[in-house]
Length: 233
Image (cartoon, rainbow, N blue to C red; front, side):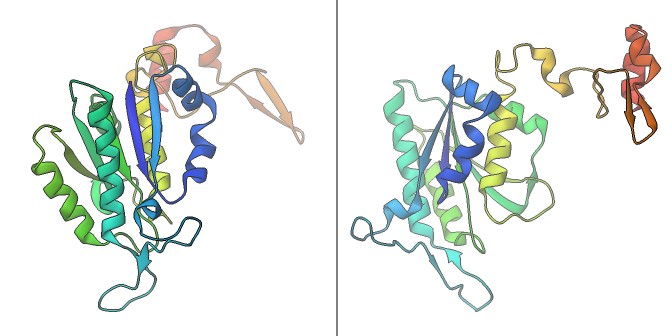
């Protein structure tokens, strides 16, 4: 089982996606587990009071920046769970998101599927104080028992409001590669001949006087020709 640890201020936004469809089923079947750490929980203050986790950027500029230590402490708490959860500590990995990071691919998803614990750091506002990343790298390098790695990814070329969307993309991409999650391994599109164009019944759709038909090759049952069409399309 892979455990995903989301470091986020917005658990509800993540649960809306992770409690549905294939991901929900994978959780119920204990193929994955999802845990949360909220940086606000690591800021001093009375229970129920607003706990500030952002501040103005040094040097000026628009927006606010998430402060480093609440994020670091949230990651530390996630890693402590790793130590408690198993006598033989498999490799955990910390994922940091950045538009300048390596573009995340299916190949990266396959590699991440070999880790026991994946910690996903979800930034907000104008980002996270850069010192948090430096501290986490120091933490990883100084913890041989944990064998922690830190990887930096970008999910597409767009910039998002927060790291939750990229984190959900990684949870989804990794989970669907785990044995049994999709039922059959062939259901993973990039492991078979697939096309971005797919069709279902009926054979012909009539819309505003115009007919839209399924390509004839898909109706032939000739698998070699169908695979050739899928590659070309």
